[in-house]
Each structure stands twice: as C-alpha cells, then as structure tokens.
Image (cartoon, rainbow over all chains, first blue to last red; front, side, top):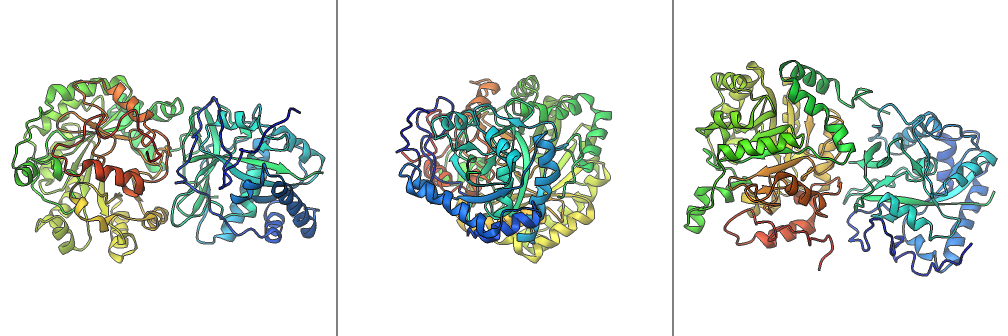
Length: 263
Length: 370
C-alpha cells in the first residue's frame, strides 16, 4: 500500500477535509447542518441491535464493548485519525449474512428493524420508508467504495464496526475520490452499516435547534446513475428515500466512513 | 413503517384522483405534470411560476410580502412613482411560451389581489389554460358564487384563499379589513360549489403552531376536505417591521407533526412524490410586475429580467447559485439566519425591489462570509 500522509485529513470537528478532489466538494463548511452528538452507550447499542436486528447475535455485550473500544483507541492513538472522534462515532454490530441481493436483505431485515428501533426509542415519532417499490434488485456495491470488504466480512461471521458521518458536503464522486486517499481500513458506508448504526443510535438525526444533514448510503449504488438512496430527518421523524444528486455537492449532503473490527 | 403513497407513482390517492380528473379535461397539462418526477431525476426543474402583474390591492395586511412593490408604498414612503416598465399581456404570452418549451406546467396569478385586476381574464388567456395549470391567489373579498363559476369557466383550476385566523376579529385585524373573515367563508363555499380546487393559505407567525386557534383551523380544513397551506412569516416586506413573527425550528417541526393528522402542508412538505425541501427555483419562481424573476415570493433579489434574459438562463443562474440550487430541508429566507442577515442588509433602504441581478444575487455568491 502506498504511504498516505493523513496529517491533514480531519478537521477539529471531525470533518474529513476534501483536499483537492476533482469532483465537487465544499473546501470549507459553515457547519449549518450538523449531526446530533448523541449520548453513546455501547451496552445499550448492543441491546438495541440484538432486540431489533439480530436476536441471535452471538457476540456478547462485553465483547462488543471491548471491540468497539479497541476501534476507538485505534483512531485516538493515531494522530492522523484522532480528530475523527470530535464528530459522531457510532458503534454497530451486524449478524452473519450471506448476501445474494443487498436490497432484498435491506428491505426484509434492516428497514423493519430500524422502524422498530426508532419507534421504541422515540415513541412519539416514526420511521417512514418513501422508497417506491423497495430496493430489492436495485442496490450494488459502488466501485471504489471498498464496500465489498464489508459483505465479505459478513459472509465470514458477525461484524463489529464504527460508523462516522464525516464526509460532509461532498458530492458522491468526491466521496469515492477522497476514500482512495484514506487508509485501507476505511470503507464508504453503505446500506447495512448505516442502518445498523441508526438502529443502535436512533436519535443521530434528531435535532430541535437546527437541521441535521441527509446521510447518503454511498457505499452502495442505486439502479440509476445519478440517483441514490439516503436517510433523512423530517422534523423529529426519520425517513428513507431516493433522490437525484447528479454528482453535485450540497452542504446538506453527507456520507459516512466505516471501519470494521478484525474478525 | 407508514407509507400512504401509491406504490407505482408516489402519489397519494387524493393526488392521483386529481391528476386523473385533469387528464380527462386537459390532457396536455396533465401529461406535463406527470413528467415532473422524471424531469427531476434528469436534474431538470419544473418550478411553479407566480406572476405578479399588478400590485393593486383592496387590503393592507400586517405581513404583506408585496407591500414594498406597491404604488401606494412608493407614493407614501418615497414620494415617487415607480417609473420602471411593467409587463404586459405580450410579455406573459412570451413567458408562457418559454415555460412550455421547458416543460413547465404551473402558473399562479398573484399580486396584489388578483381579483381586482381588470384584465384578469386576459391574463388567464395569455397564460393559456390548455397549456398550463392555472391557480389564482385571492383574499376572497370578491370571490362570490358567480365569480367562482366564472373563474372555472375561463380555465382557472385552483384557488388559494388566505385565512389568517379562525377567530374572526383576529383575521380582520391581521388583514386590516373588517368583514374579511366573513368574505373568506363565503368564498370557500363559492369555490367548492364551482368545482374549483381549493386550498386555504395561512401565515404562521412564531408560536402560532401550538395554539388552539391553529389546531381549530387544521380541524376546519380536515372537515371541509380542504388543504391548508402554511406560509412561514418571513422577515421581508411589511414583516420587516415584525421580526418577532419569524418562526424557529420548533414551530416548523410542530407543523410537520400536524401533517400526520391534518391536510396541512408547507412549501417544503413532500407532494406529488417530490421531496425537494426549500423550493427556491427548483419548485417556484416569481415574476414581478417589472419582469424581474425572483427565486421565491419573499426574496427580493432578482435572477434576471425576462426582457433581457431568456427564462432558461435565469433558471440556470438560480440553480448554480449556492444558496438556491442545492437541496436543503429548511426555508432559506424564513429560517437561515445568515441569509436573512445578508438579505436584510442588502435591501435596507432600497427603493426599487427586487435588487437586480448582480446587486443581490450574482455568480460570485458564496455560503461562507467574506
């Protein structure tokens, strides 16, 4: 692997700086749209994921917490990635899965689990899936996203990871381009990891005093060029939807990075 | 997961029924409306075009966004007349033609009070109801049964009627016109009996969303089967003198919650399968009486003048502007403090609004402070 100078990769708020991407990304941010900084309780996240997504999860709560802490320590101990911890860092676990069709698994398992987790945590509000006709047969690993490694890990066994929505104000091609300059352990977040992070921490996008960003699941590509899928708040509710982005940047549009614990 | 939309089209059952009805009467217009979703997926836009041909008005409302464009304001405040050239019916025909060429499908006749315009029927004809879906705003004062039937007969499809309180005295006081509440109630019956599509429009000032009065208005609309369009008070026009009217996110979120129970919506509520957030340029533009095109009714910065610049280029200017083009979930002029400050500073003391292209908006705009 070529040496990557990561000293200037993340700013003091945990934002991944875009550097000189050729695709559109905002060089600086006025930080108008922001994620909530939710209280992270690793044990509660494990319990939520077991309750709503993976009842037969074999990883015990203490193991989960240890592996999450190990991942955090890895980020904290590296000067190049330390700043990431200034932004939201959401632990998640995923059950073992042999994925034939990303969309089919997502519709059948992840969206209902997110619906249940959201309603359980935020009883007055709801999760709404606006994607017409579901995503079965429509999602594929995006070239350059490194997301294939998550699917490979899922096929081998249960997965623990961290989800970090730090690619803020990037166009989708710029997010892919930026990923190429990051260490190999970073993946562009996709459908399963983003949903699992939200199942574990349902209030990530709930803000009362301002607006949170839209989160693309950019590790996976939709069925049509320039049109992709995302999570987005609507008031205090959470929604899943698709929209045209046409490779443009917006301060409202963010992407996530994921890192996985070793098997 | 709750989802009340039709699986194939993204339309609600009510939206689909209205589209089907329109398709039998005006197939060309219905076909254009049906193409909007695929246009948006190609990155094309289909804004509603609001036409302010005249600012004549029989009311003087506390929150009027058009007050500073009115002849009475020029005379009273600046002691001058507005000498700028005004748009005429030929300009509207040309606008209609260019809009049709771009696939745009919807016009709103507004003002001022459209129903005091002597040439209202001619404006409808110039827009061409067989090519475009035509809506008119009104305060309801002149909308009796005969006028409503007449509007329907000349091709107007929809009426957007202003009602600012369910308490008669409050509405009349806000509108500075005694008797106006009763006229609105009459207009509701008249519009529905004439078969016009009807929505009520109400201004949301800070704190109102949580009042019993507002809840009563939501209930009233649900019972009558009428949509309630909620317009946030913006710090422009007459409202410049009432910054206390400007809402905060909690007000906006309260309305979003009420959408679950009542037929209430704002300009950012997803509709007809379209989720575009703030609709500046993407979902609406305003053509002022001088041919200037602004990105929303409340932003007094022009993107160009139709006599000098083709509509397509004006829309392109808007879409490449960092404030206007990108998707955002909040109201730019109603909620973004930085933009509100820029707008207030640039328009302060200006006699002729909107500020022309280059004076308010320009291709050098940035989200970041200089």
